[in-house]
Image (cartoon, rainbow, N blue to C red):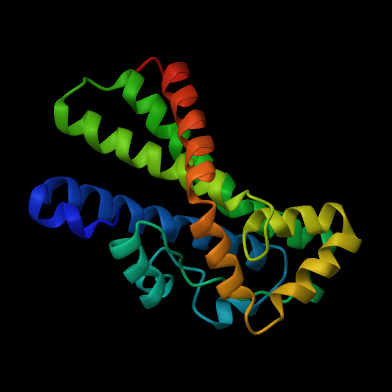
Length: 203
C-alpha cells in the first residue's frame, strides 16, 4: 500500500514517513556519491550528486511509485568504474546500505538514552525501520541493486554477466516486475529482520 492512503486517514504519520523516506534516500545516495568522490571518481561531483540535498537525488517516477505503490527508487549515482577499480566499485556500492545501517544504529541508541515520548518514539522507530528496510532491500543481489554490484566485485565473472544484463534496454522493467512479484517473500524477510532488530533494541 502506498503512502497516499495515509494522507487522509493519518496526515501526521504521512508526514513523518514521507520525510523519513526522503531524508534516508538522500543519505543513501549521498553515501554512494561521497565514497566515489573520495576514491577518485569525479563523475558524481560533475553531476552535482555529492550533496545531502534530497532534490538532487529524488527521481520523479521513483517518488511517485513510493507514494502510490509503496516501493520506489531514487536516481542512481553515476560513476565510472574504470576510475575506481574492482574494490573501489564494491565500496561505493556498499556505502549506501552501510549509511542506512549507521542511521538505524544511531536511532537505536537514541531510543535507549533519550526520555521516551510518544512523538520521539514514533519518529525514531519510523526512521530506524525505514533504514533497516533500505539497507536490506538494497543488499539483495539482483541487478540494479547495490547487492549485485557487491556480488559482482567478489565474483568478477558474475559481475560481467550482471553488467551485460543491466545494459539491456528492458532490464529495469524486468527487475521492477520481479520485485513486484516477489514483494511478499521479500517483505517477510525484511519484517523478520526488523522484528529481530526491535528485540535487540528491547522494544
